Image (cartoon, rainbow, N blue to C red; front, side):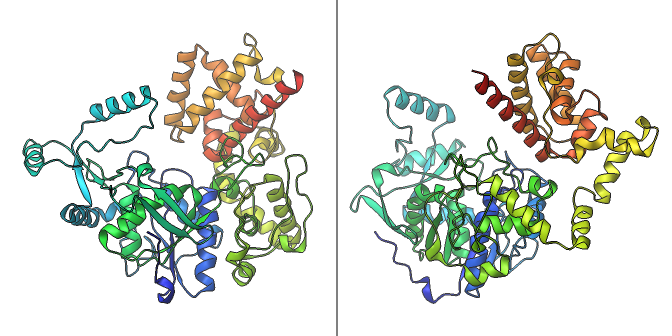
Length: 505
């Protein structure tokens, strides 16, 4: 049935709900900006909610980095974990009892059910479906258990999940209105009986999202288009609770130049990286505003013709966006995250600074006291004059470091196996805590597994990071340089070498 919501008269309330599972993502800022503009234009409220129920991927420092990065961009919120508000708490991990109470409501009215299958039974089902060339999905085996069977399983203490009971009769579909796309229909045959409550008592995204949005009186759900396929489940949940359905707006995903979904393999996606690398917040927020987000159409780039020039409509600050933002200008074609265009914009903003503000920007970022104080101990015992400081530390300030093959390829290794090992190093670094105590054993373990000596292993990484075989202590330098910038440097190295290899073919 079509979503006919009556939220028009309600005060506008929107939210973003990032997960603290790593560095804050540019996509979070992109969606955050659209929500911010929509709320500010309509005298509404912009809410920040932290979705931290994925405890396996939880990163303790990530929440504060989300706060820092959004404030760096000027995207201030009205309610949130740090500010409080009338509909808190604003961390999902602090709302688990609320979700359990609502699950009981669904079990009581018959729109949800307990599923007692073991992980092994579910995996066996999945393998049988794959073998039969069927899409893997739950088969509803426990959908109609008798009360006696349920009581028996509960009495023996058998773990269970709680699943949504997707309607089986007429109508055999769910419709909802996307404010950017019109009415979208999903046949129930393609909607799984989604898990709402996991066996550990924590909610899934789907349940927590709907319960929180309702209780926090969110009128407009503005999020990325990747959530379109989940929306029928959310609509069914609203109906199961008997709640009013909000308006849905699904923004087009950010894309690389080749139109693939933006990913860290092709562009830095960490807001921390851009802050540490010396991008100005005004340039970044301007750039995100060009990403199909309701502003006049920007100068376009193509893979062979980057946009290095622009029209006057390409440059605007946050107050301009609030004044000029129009949902009618949102373009559904995937907006291109063009790093060349971002650097051009950043250059425009840098050149517009007064000398005093330019100096202040340097001192706040790559020449900050905090950064220099971390670097100084690494080189103090290795230089004889202060003038030699730059010789040993230039790689910590430079943006483009690319060692030649004679520097990064160990004597007894081929370029091919060296690059293959560098890719393995990247995988390990991505998954490792950014401390000396964690990095050293992780890298040594990789070397042992791949039969690379410690000298070869660390010398390769040193060459990639510094462009030389001589530098201050490697791991200490990596910690100072930061995870985001180190990973970006390794990725750029691998991408460049891949392109060079293809050119030679």
